[in-house]
Structure formats: structure tokens, C-alpha cells
Image 1: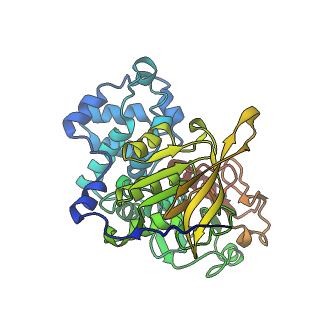
Image 2 (image 1 turned 180 degrees about the vertical axis):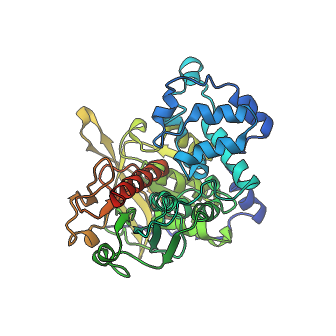
Image 3 (image 1 turned 90 degrees about the horizontal axis):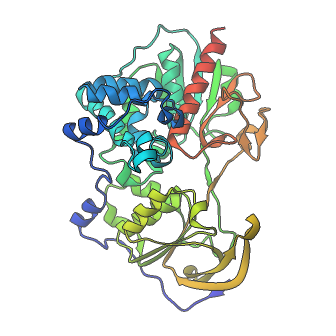
Length: 449
């Protein structure tokens, strides 16, 4: 472990109250009625529309846009909710630039796609503000009971579709609040005005859904017990662990789990109380790295640098998200991997990084290094599963994650799974919503014969 005489500069309250409010305003101003109609008129309403194919939940995008164009935003929202009950949040957090909008015919022809994400938000926000109540009626009770582990996007999606079919659903959530990464894990400027919590209320208003908080799998509730008590179990537990740097000193107080810090930021009612370094280094290349880097800059950090071990094209964060960070003053440096943490007592004061080379697809260090002063180092190099609760249940695991088939069915006759905890799962809210929906339909089909 290297040592250093430099001292750390970590403070709270670096900005004025007005500056905090301004910095964490909604990143995208919602469309006005006029703007939405004008934008909807740009859509070609394609037959076999490529945007539908690119949407993980298969929303009928041409139809919902046509409904906006004809002055029926509430009908448009219903079209969206039929396939994606979390259409409101997905409109805010989906990387539409790499999904539906990337394949839009307007993008191909003009380099300017229809603003599908903003139109989806316009419709769903209009519905929730104008009507607010659940657009679907619950079927008569079937008497079947379904247990769901985790009140994140996958669990809530499965719960809603299962309740809609008339099943009684109990969600077991480890935290004291529902929403999963929508509530705790995404940047605050993407979900303002407590939208994530309001969406949970909207989803559960269908009835038949009971959420038990403070119920952690493997501690407060056991999978074997749920299998014995309920007719079916859906696991949407996410990924509980954040990967370490595997360097001496990465347990220091100012070498921080980025996911945990973002959760604290999201739940804070006073941003001025959060500790913020003057010089901050973020290790990683995905959405978490972008979100923590941008937010720590908006909290008043002077110099924020993302260091990623490969090139820009290999980053998990889209080019648009990288641009968001850079526009807010974040520096992104590529081809650098952590080598050593320099310590001042029990605190990190700098991080030494080695330049890398990616020749022939393999990554190797070049031996050349650079040292960056760091009052805070944020770890955003991916999350890992906890397979402990599953090992005695006979579920097939793939590198610690749950193996599922196309119906999100596990190798156990009564257990389904979806979201980040499954093998091959994508780190996308919309993909988790689809997993929950698909699982719920297969659970219903299985239970009802």
C-alpha cells in the first residue's frame, strides 16, 4: 500500500440551497401539449415498425404515438401500460438512444429520430395526472398465492400482472421502501418529485398486492418456506454486492461503494449534508459510474474524473450518457486501470492507475502509470450476486446467477426469476419489467392448467 502526506478535502454544504435545487432539476423538460403533437406528427407510423422490435417490452409505439397525434394521450398511455406498467419510469430512464430511437426510420434517414421517450413520458404523465387510477381491472380471485422476492422493477411488474389475473400476491422486500433501483439506484435528476414512489402506489392500486418490508431473503424469509407456503415464487432479488477494487486500502472510509452513495443521495431530504470531495475519481464505465460522477459534480466537487480500463466504445454507458457527464464537467479518461491506493493514515489521498492496451481483444497493462489526487474514490465496477439463498433449493445457477428459460422459469417447478439476478439479465429497468411480465403470464398459465 503506497503512502502519501496529502490530506483529504471532504466537505458538505459546498453549494447554496438554490444551487442544489437548480442542479438537481429534471434533466429533461417534459413536452408541452403542442410540442407533443408536433413531435408525434413526425412519426411515419411504420408497418412492422423497427422501434417496436427494439423495445424489450414490445410496446406498440406507432399506435401510442398516433393516439397522441389525434389528441388522445390517455388512450396512448393505456396502450403503453398494456405492455409496460412502468412505462412512466422507463420513459425517464430507458436508453432510448440505443433502443427504439436508434432504429427509428427518421434516425436512419435524417439522423434525428422521433423523440419516442419524451412522447411516452408525455402520455403516461398525462394519464397519471389526469386520471391517476389503475387502467386495468383485477380478474376474480383465483385463490392462488404467489410470493415475490424483491419490490424492484421485475418484482413489481410480475406482481401487477399476477394480481390482474386474480392471484393474491405477497412481495417480500428487504428495504423499508419499494421501487428497487428506480427508488435507490438511478440519478436523482432522472426521477424527480418522488416519481418512483408514486409509480409504486399506481401499480399496487390494482389490489391484491401486499408488500412486507424488512424481509430479506435468507435472513428474514427462507426460500424453502415460501415454496412450501405459496403456489409459485418469483425471484427478483437484484444484485446485492458491489465489486471491490481488490487493492490494499479499498475499505477506507473515502473509498466508497457508488451504489450505496447514490441510494443515500436519493433518500436524502437535504443534499447539503452529503460529504463531497474536492477531487473525486470514479472507477468504472457503466451507468452507475456516469450517475455517481455527474451527481458528485452537481453536489459541488471541483474535479471529477471517470477512469475506465478500455476505450469509449466498450463502456456500458451510452455515448449520450457519457455526453451528459461531460457536459456537466466530468472528465472521462480511458485505458486506465487502478494499480494502488495512496494513503494518508487511514484515508485514501490519491489513486495510482496503470495505462492499458487492448490489442487483439485482450487487456494488459503497459507498465506506465499516472497518479491522481483523490479525496474520494467511488467504486462502480459492477455488482455481483449472492447465491447463498439458492444453493439448497436445487435451482440451477450460472456463475452465481439464476438460470431461467424463455418463460423465466428456473429448474425448480415452482420458482421463476427475472431482472439482474438471472443469468444473461440486462441492467435495464425495461428488461426487468419484461422479465416480470413474461414470468407472470407463464405462472398464470401453469397455475390455471
